[in-house]
Image 1 (cartoon, rainbow, N blue to C red):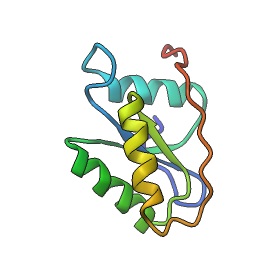
Image 2 (image 1 turned 90 degrees about the vertical axis):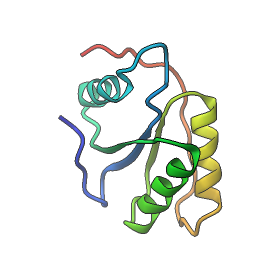
Image 3 (image 1 turned 30 degrees about the horizontal axis):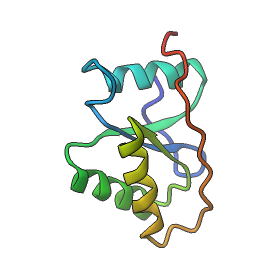
Length: 102
């Protein structure tokens, strides 16, 4: 599975557990990432403040690639949180709904 990643090459992922109509957002994200061979350290957010804390933690650990799994609100909070830090990387975002089967 692709839940652990090094700071040099992996993604710091934040998953909104309420994303979609089901309660399995984390498992679906893991399957989709594994299918694409993408390494990511995934975290479930509990609240908006917790999501912001997770972004700060990822920045503090030196991650340069962030993944938001959820809707437009989740993506907005991750990007806004990144912009309010001293994160040195440039922001590039790809959105869409990939197939979630493996």
